[in-house]
Length: 189
Image (spheres, rainbow, N blue to C red):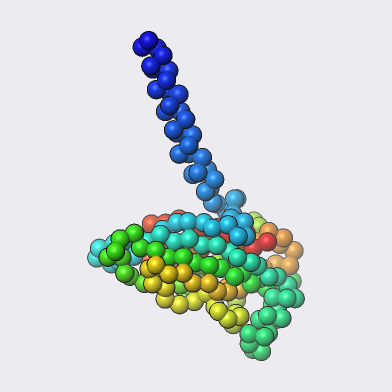
C-alpha cells in the first residue's frame, strides 16, 4: 500500500512538472529561436527610480516588408529617404506593443521607440546592423505608452541583401526601464 502511494505521488509530481514546463519550453525565445511573424512574445519591464513596479509587455511582429516594396513605402513616407547602401535592403516591420501594469497603482508610462538600442536588427550570424536614419510610414512605433494600452507602428532596418534570415531584437532595459525582463528576438523573414 505504501509503495502504491509513493508511486502515485511520484507520477503526480512528474505529470505536474511536465504541465508547467511545457508552456515554458513553448515560450523559448532566443537568438537561435526567434519568434515567428504573428507570434506574440510576453515579457516584463521594471519602471521606477525609487520604488520599482513591474509591467507586463507583449510584442508581436505583425508583418514585414523587404526590398523594393519597403523602399517604395519609405519614399512615400518621405521623399528625403535615401536608397539603402550598396548591397543592402530595407526591411519594414509592423509591430504591436502591449503594455499592462500588474497593480492599480502602476501608472508610469513607457517611452517606446526613441531609445537607440530598443529595436535592433541582427544578421543571421547575430552581428548587429547599423541603425538607419529614415522616416518610416505612419504610424511609427514611437511614443509614450500608458499602462493598459497598446501601440502599433513601423520600424525600419537596413540588412545585407544576401542575409535571408535577419532577426529583430527588443531590449527591455531601454525606454526608461530600470531592469527585469529579457531581450526578445523576432524573425524579420
